[in-house]
Every structure is written in C-alpha cells, then in structure tokens.
Length: 304
Image: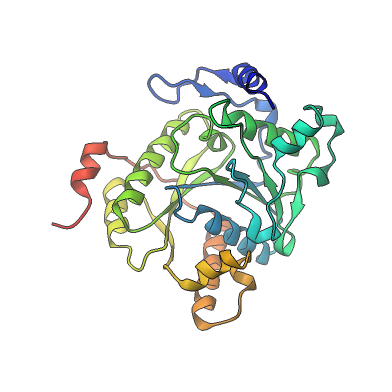
C-alpha cells in the first residue's frame, strides 16, 4: 500500500471533535459502530507490559465461560493472537492490499482465524511507519467485520492496542469499546503510562460510551504502588497476575495458559483469569478517574 492511499483515506475520516483541547481525532463513522449486544473491551498499557498475553488469556477465559469471543490485535507487529492461533496471522491491511482494497472480493477466512477454544482472531495491522493513521486501519477492520456479519452473534470483543501511545489513531478503539482496561506493573514507568492512558480514556468519554473499567496488575509480586495510586485518583484493581515463569514459558510455547502442563501455581492463575472474565461479563462500575499532571505523579510515586 502506498503512503498516498493511507493519507487520503485517513483525511477523509478525520474530523474535529471535542476530545480534548487542541484535539484533531479520527472521527468514527456511525455506520461502523459495534452492535450494543456485544461487550467490548479495549486493553491498554505500557509497551511490553503483557497486554497481548493478558488479552489472549482473557479471551480464552471468556470462551471457557461459554462466550463467543473475537479478539482484534491493533499492533502493526500483528502478534496479539499468536498464542491462540499458534502462528502469525496475515493482517487486514495485508489482505486488503492483495485485492487492491476491493472489500467485496474478500472472504471471511481471508482475515478471520479460529484460535483456541473457538476464539475468533483478527490482526488489523497498521500502515508502514510514518505513512498513515492507525485509526483508519481499526475503522476498516470493524467495517469489514460488520459487512460479513461477524459481530452480529459475538458476545465479547477485545481490542488489544499498541503500547502507551496518545495518538488519536491508536486511541480509536476507545470509540468502539464499552470499557477500557489498563494493564500495569507495580513500577514507576507502568503507573506513569497508566495515568496518561486514564486521561486519554476520560477525554474520549466526553463523546463516546467508553469508560474506565479498571486496572489489571501484571508481572508484579506486589501491588502496593498500584493500589496507592489507584486510591488517589479513583481507579480499582480488577485482577493480579504475578511475574511467574509459567507465563513466560506459555509465550515461548505459543500457547494460552489454559493449555500448559497443570500445576498448583498455574491453576491459581487460570482461576484468576476465569474470575476476571466472569466479573467483566457481570459488568464493572464505570470509574471517573482524576488523572494527575505529569509533575504531580512524579512527586507522588515511590517510597519516602
């Protein structure tokens, strides 16, 4: 795909909305809204914090509860779903380019792949570096899914979103989601990123149905700093996954945690994922966080 195609397409969908002072965001076409019958979650967090691991195992947990699940990877690396599918799947952008963006020529099996326990997997992909907007890619992915009626009978949609970016394009899944989930470790950098993500979700909440659902503590033995910060700005910890070797090995084995060799340690993690999925399905209270300014959080975090 050429840079010109991406730029022109993004410009067509761009509109000024009140998402914050000076904001120029990719505006969602109402025709591509996800049906309200599905529960839609957008998973954010600092780069490398384990969003894809969390998203994939949460998808697996929802499927264990009998839910029809669709996971959408929103990273150009297209590695969100490989523990579910055991391979790197072609992206929506890859397959669109092959048919010169004639969407009517695509079949469902060209861009949707069935993973572990029936979880449907899609990798949106992204534009070449420096050439376009990730928001356009997400919008085209949702549009394709609607055209093929894949969202009509879906219970849960999980967007796994690239890093701790503040770009309007990669914030675009927030236009589709009901709850934003933030994955965070018990350290300065992760909490600093979480604060900025919370601010982004609050900004989108002015115009869309997205609200903060809560925080998933990951790769952390303790949660004291996360809990102290949450209490200060009005967030809630939904789950805690410690830094265990079995989680690292599951990625190397290209497997979800529900496929690993049984052990008491693993069973505890599996049960936490099942508990998290059940609580999210039951519904979380929308959180009205009060994110700190950067200098405030710098002074607040850490030990005296």
